[in-house]
Image (cartoon, helix red, strand yellow):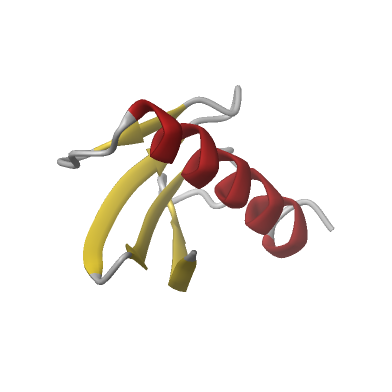
Length: 69
């Protein structure tokens, strides 16, 4: 489960879509970039394929709540 989820705009002009993400997953600090098309790029992580699916689903739900609502 994701905890301590934080987002920052990717660009100075916050009207442009794209965000820097940081959060903890299983006690590990993770940083990622969320692009306007919904693609998520993880900076440096060692997720299993099952964990990637789980984490991406949780991120999309959090982005809906924090950004798109």
